[in-house]
Image (cartoon, rainbow, N blue to C red; front, side, top):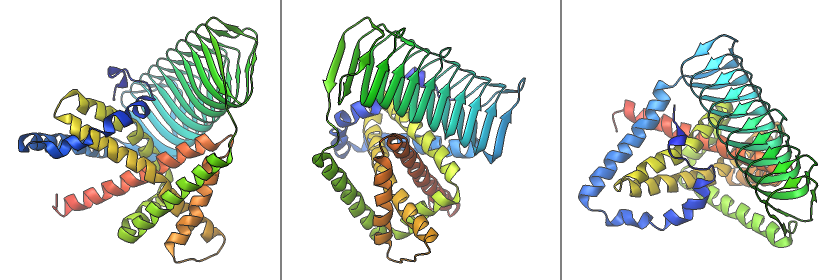
Amino acid sequence: MIDTKLFDIPDSWLAHNILYHENKIEMVSGMSKYKLLKSIIVISIVILFFSTIADASEFRTGESLVINKGEVVNDDIYFAGNTVTVEGIINGDLVAAGSEIRVAGTINGGVIAAGGTIIIDGNVTDDLRAAGGIIEIRGDIGDNVLVFGGNLVLEKGARIARDLTIGVGNAIIGGTINGNINGKATDLEMSGTTRGNVTMEIENNMRILPGAKIEGDLEYSSPKSQEIAGNVAGKTTYKETQKKTESSISGEITGYLWLLLIGILSLIFAPVISQNISDRISLNPLKSLLWGILILVVTPVIAILLLITIIGIPVSLILLAVYIIEIYVSRIFIGLWAGQYILKKLNREIRYKPIILAFGLVFVFIGINLPILGTFIHFMIIILGLGAIVLTEYDAYKKFREQRLI
């Protein structure tokens, strides 16, 4: 089990520090042979770490996973399937992808979940990171909570020990947060209590109901001033924002064209690999989701570990650079897969793959810009594409190892 509390970093750590570290990548070219040898050793350790996860961890797949009441599992659980029900105790982490995930027991570790419906009735002693259409939290979370999805409900009796970070369509917050609330929502309604600050970007409406308590500051941005009927102990700051303009739309078009260009180059110079990644999505989407979540969370942790030692800094920066690139290009392979899938359903055959990619990327950009589910769809696209990339890379690694080429 990876204890991310050892590093005491927020979920937004990577976004805040990437630009600072990118300028240091050029240090690699000036390393001495001695430092280069040490870095190669560190890279080998990283590869060994990921291959150990793949070989040693039990990635269960199937229709359902059930941990009955009274049952105790002394290990991490990785599962991709239809439904997950935990009524017993897991002494480790739960990493799951499925249509419905319900935790009514106790997780003595963290939970990483992606699914249609995610319900946390029980207790989680570490972080909760969830992406889903509906996320309901009714129990106690012992650390931070990060949520992407359509709807979030934090029930009245629920408690979060530290911060709540959200990117959702609709959020109803009735429980207690001992830390801060950060993020973005289309609509937010709060009747609960937070002992820290609230910093939110609101697209439509926000209601701080009577009885709600914010013991820190309230800072929000929105196209209009919102209803604040609850108690705000600190300062309230409102920043007016504008709805999408022509410039923001042109920015999306530019982003689409850049992705299309990179995707066409990928199809020209690496057609087999590009198609293999796209095929991996269809072959086992839940396993790709599971691996995508795992890599998304574990890679920054490894990067921090490498930063602890001086010789690991260049390797850490290279790892982060690869990580960022793979997250960016993940949308390309989802676009290729979406184009092939939709055209197949329409009984239309187009052999020129750049046209298929262009067609699929249109649906990708429409999905990620939807007003309510866009954030959730974008997150799912990233982890699905990232998982497919990593699984394809791992298959190639195993093939080379069997042929003793590495």
